[in-house]
Image (tube, rainbow over the protein chains, first blue to last red):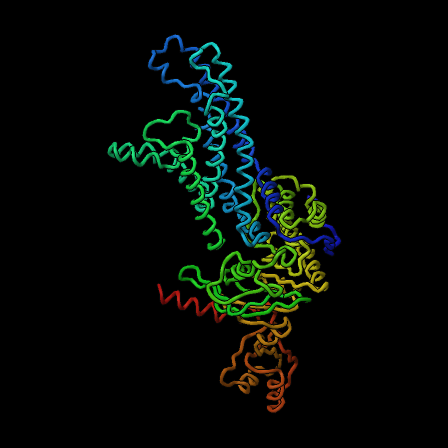
Length: 276
Length: 306
C-alpha cells in the first residue's frame, strides 16, 4: 500500500452525467464480469451442457448392442443432445441467485442503491445482462452438443436426427431459452429472498422437490397439476414429442414465462418498498 | 445542504431516530455526534433513501435523495457498514459505480491515486485491511465531485497520518463551499475537525450549535482555588447546590460557583487566595454531561423493564 497523496485537494470532475438505463446496464455488466463466481458458474454451465450429452452419447453407443428393444425405443437423440440442460440449469440458477444475494451479504447493495436510488433500473439491468449472457453462452453449447452427439452416434441410424427436421431446431434453440429463463427466475427469487442459501434453497424446492412430491397425490390430481409447475411447463419448450398430460411447447413456454414475470413483479415491488 | 424535519424511524418497536430536525449548512464542517447506537448511521441511511422514514422528511440540496437525476454529483457518502463486494477489486467497484453516471475511467484512477490505493487497486477488496477499506470508501464518496459529502465515522481504522489527512481534506472541501457532514462518537476528533455540531442521543436531538457554544453551554461552573485557609473558605462558601472536591497539590475544586463568586466571598471574609482558576470542561466532558441524562434515563427504563 502506498502513501496517501499529500495533495488533499479533491480534483474537480469536468464531466457531469446523469443516471441513464444504458449506463446502469454497463455498470451491471462490469459487476457481473468482475467476480470469480461468475466465471466458475458460467464455465460450469457451458461445460456441463456439452460434456453430459457427450458422455451420454458414448455410453449409449457402447451399450447399444446389448440393449433391449424397449430400452432402445426409450432413447431419443434429442434427449441425449439436450441432457446437459437439466444439469446446466443448476449452475445458471445458482449464479442468478448470487448476482443479487451477494450484494446483500457483502453490503455492496448500499453502494449500488446510493448510485441508482430509484433502484428498479438496477433490477432490469441485472435481468437483461444476465439473460443475454446466459443465452449467448448456452446457445453455442447446445448447438455443439447436438452436432457432437450426432457425430458420436453416426453408427446408429435409429438415433440419427436432422437439424432441419420439423421441431428439432426449435427444441435445440429453446434448450438455451429455457436455461436463460431459469436464470431470470432464479435472479428474481434471489431479489425476493435477499439471501444466498435461502435463494438457492427456494429455487431447489420449486424445481427439484416440488415435482417428485406431486407423485404423492392421487394420479388424476398429479396429471392435472404437475404440467403447470414451472419446471414441467418450462421444459416443454425443448421437448420434441408432446407427451400426454404435458402442455404444448408454446403453452408451456408461456406458463413458465408467466412464472418468471410474476417473480420479477414481486421482486420489483419489494425492491422499492423494503429498506436496504 | 441537508434538511431534516421531524425525521423519525422505527425498527419494529424500537425507535432509532426520534423527531430529528436540523439543517446542515454548506461551507463548514458539521460534526454529527452521539454515542454508539444513538441513531447516527440510521439518520445517514434515511438521508440517502436507503431506509424510508416512519415519519418526517429529509432532503439533500433541496430534493429527496431519490429524486436527484445524478445523485453521485449531489452527495458522496461513506457508510459505516461495509458496502463493497469482497470478491471485486477496488478498481472495478469504483468503475461500476462511475459507469452509472458516465463518469470516465480516468476519474476512477485519479481517486485511487488520491487515497493511495493504486498498488492494491486490482486486488480483491476482501483482502483489504480496515484502513484500506476506509480509504476505498472515501474514494467512493468523492468519485462524483459531490456538492455534499457525508462520512460516517471516517476515522475508523485509519492511522494517525490518515486521520490527519481526512481532517485536512474535509476542511478543504468545506472551504470550497461544499456541505460536509461527518459523524463520530469521538468528541476529540470532532473538536479538531468540525465548526458546527449536531449532537444526538437515543435518536433525539440534544444540541445543534457551534463547537465553542457547545463547550461553554455544557461546561458546569467549576473553580479551582488554593489558599492557606482552605477550611475557613470551605465554611464560607457552603450553600445549597455547592459541592467540593479535593484537587491536586492541596487545591480545592468548587462546583456550583463562578470564579467571581468565590473571589468575592473570600475577599468578604478576608481570606488570602493563592490561586483562583475557572475550569472549562473539555469537549469530551461537555459531551458526557450532555449525553449523561439520556443514558441515565435509558438505564432506568431498562431496570424497570427487567
